[in-house]
Length: 556
Image 1 (cartoon, rainbow, N blue to C red):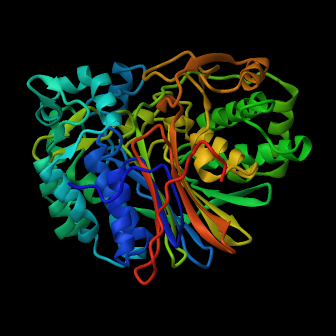
Image 2: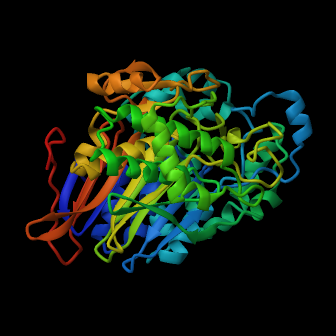
Image 3: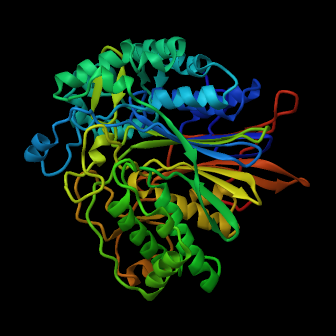
């Protein structure tokens, strides 16, 4: 497959713009926009392509959450997350395990991505779903070069992958995992994409693709049935919103942790009114870390399927509670933190805006790197392990139950100013996604260009390795985080652990923002150097395309 553009980290000047963590996905989206498709058509093309080129992070067998905003400023939350098997034996599983299993069939919930694709295409798209999937289908059939990020995760997860015949058949050659630059061919996945393209989501939910996945899961001990797949639904609802420095940020509620990003941002806005613009890499790093620690605790106490346990949204987003969190952080009071699993590899973000005023933040995932480490040989589909997020603690609102959606780390973000949409943000980072979004928002509010906001050094709270950790009070900092920021974090009572520069252990972000230029607003896109992505901006078919790479080391 030939590349349409060279990989570039930033682009601006266009009427449409896109950023994703893999250049092939950005190219697929850009080609749709050049051809007159809208932002949703483009996002779907990118999302499908990412299942081919980044199977470590997302899959046809994973989940999807998205925000779609239209010219009138209206924003809708698309929740395609799947449920646990209705017949799951919770008592037996709790007797056998202290924590939810991470690998194998047991943590697999109904994959919701394909249903999400269908709803997005039917509700806002201008083209059939099949046209969005066609480039991905061709790429899977013809083969793609293994990207560096995929190669890294293949090497890291090789032991787990080698145990599964489906994984060995796709990602190994001569007994070894594929390495960067080698060709990855996925003919069975290509056939599945073609079938979904021609039959629609019915191929997954009641059709042959889903039936093959259920058969594999049953062989692994799962209670999943074809009826569980067929009963899957996608929910559309309004987004939640708060303001930071006069700019409105919108994210997801329900079982998404987006609420807790907004909660933290509102508390930080209180801090900002007292201290001025916040610098998460300097004097304010400790206060920011304390706020994020508090909101992470609230997430773990409250976030769950609202059909089972409803979070106190009004309270968590109230002015009084924001002041309480802010005052606690500024006082330097310790936050009681619990150890949690940290997902690795888990997520991709697609952000797109078009000339007609449609904005998309689409997030899809397999949760941990390569999900459940299961690949169905019949369909070529990697299965996610989103059910690993469930708790086995009877006191938790996120306790495992049949037919329930787990706490979800996916959290799309859109931005409005004066009632008009001006930004689409996305991030990878598992449970640290609210933190990555907070870093980007604070840098943008301080005047950074999008390319600077995604590329500057970052830190995140929580141990980076997969599995159960005791490092809840550890802040992992890239080595080029300034000394003043490190001192501020340590002064707030956290332990600092140093990472390398441009380490994807601090997540990676994607941005599209409306910016001023040449006497009129235009779009700017930026992708994180920690991934394999690119940013593209251009004109509608009747205009002249503008794509210019920008030096991300400079402010623009």
